Image (cartoon, rainbow, N blue to C red; front, side, top):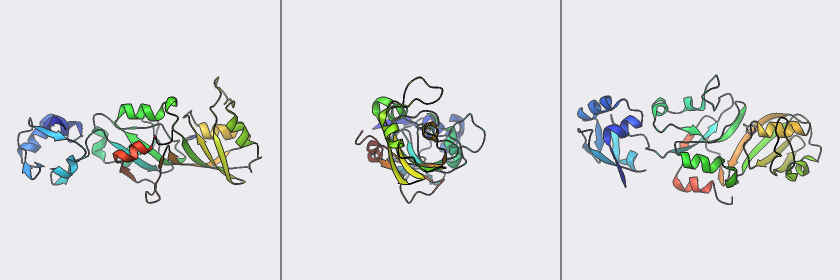
Length: 243
Ligand code: URA
């Protein structure tokens, strides 16, 4: 079990400066296993059970790093810190924006794409999920402007499709049609606007896009748009099952 100084732990979780946290502890409002910790220089055990053991001002402490969440990204919010508009981070508790290490999305979904989005402060996990070497499949449901011609599955499976402005062909992708204007598309890469550009390359246009699966992890039916939850270790390893 790792340990950390209480002041450093709570400052890194966004509860305020080391000084603020020292005052909070001195006032008796940080409680571990039922006992107030008034000396913020004390080392405390840090693990996934911390929120069950520690309260801050009467509420369970925020989950410590490493922290990974799944979110049902709603339409109309952006993943990038640089873009204008409401961000996926605004849907999380305000204090979490001050966490160190910071939370980042694992890959991105466009503003007008909904569905499964992973958010983590675990750098090695992030790189493992997005690395092309990991071959983690991502499944999208695309609604299309025009009926499928019937050739798309072969074109996408071929592995030679070149997107406009790029010099490296796409890896093979799997298309399964649901109706003439709706299809599942499973890709193993994460190029910019990839799904929309793939359909554009075969003369179609995506009118709605939703991601329901990353590797072996599916968006649960009971997680409505805008909602999120912390992932358990077993769910994180599920991402890589079958890859
Ligand atoms: N492909 C897209 O075009 N948009 C996304 O958000 C994800 C994949």
